[in-house]
Length: 257
Image 1: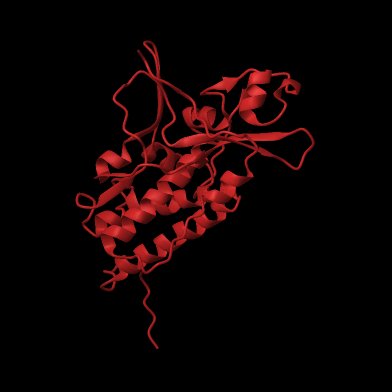
Image 2: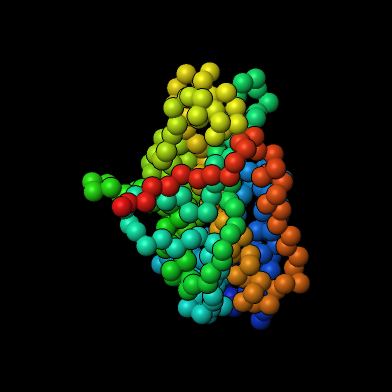
């Protein structure tokens, strides 16, 4: 019988990083599947997994860095490239409206819709803007890193803090971004009678749609780079898309002249 009285850190067994990589990939796939069948908030859990995979600090080394691949891995991106900095851009997410279980109550949100794909370095992928709203006086933007770390550290991914980043909070609540006044035209766009709302219509949980995009990109990138296509991933973007009540696929945007 052996009893070690002290606790210290020891080197891991060979291959431990690769096994953790596979576990992380399976976790992301499980969260994505829950999201794809209507459990939108399930995707928040992925922020903790993405933080483990990618986030380096003075006290924490990411899994990708432990594998010495951060400067080499090729990341897939579904975020369209834009050549302008001013204006408004929502990237690859589209407006989606759903009927809730309450009478005359609707959930106005966004869904990620994968279109054209490109590849980039990890650093560019990590810091790329998925959303921006700029004018001559003010700049608001969301990067992948901002979304992942804020959800993981403050909004239930791994921790739930009493206080939360104000930029993230305002974008998630719909207070920052576009809103629509109730009208017949708005009703046509949303697929329900908006004239009964009596106040501007805001669109919530933009960050959840972006999280689904980030998770999709990460899964495909890890499978491709590490040869892990044997771990099955069958995304279903059609299910939530088919449940929405707005007739057309459309998104907000404003391109400067």
